[in-house]
Image (cartoon, rainbow, N blue to C red; front, top):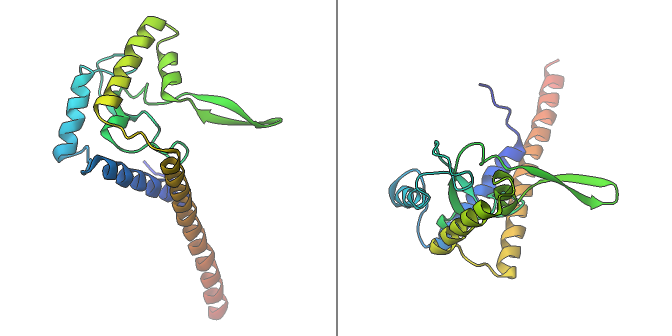
Length: 188
């Protein structure tokens, strides 16, 4: 399968690496869920949910879902208190329309509680039970309660990193095209 890569992809990867680093700072340890103590902790979290999806409760191949999304929009940290197990369907967040200015609509991802409500099909009892279990996991795994200043610092740094990486790639493209043009002109 061919993948189309952009500088925005590289910039998003850099933002996730930054959010991982910040999450590990607050955790005080590495949190590599693929091996070592991070994997053991992830296995414990899956067991807390009976090895079932935190949203729909199905027994399926489980993936990590970052409750506060792990991206440059929501700035969720890669931290044990910010992850729950989900199936692939539930890990595909729904989108909603948001009016950002008169007549201008932007599609954004729903937050985890809205996603849970969609999955529970407005069954309030099921929704409340699953929500409490997720909130207990967040609390038990000590997701840091960030101050407004900490949140803003993470947001500013992540956005700076994203723009810097993306711009560096765009600059490299421009430089290559100029060099290529001069070499082609020189060789003709």
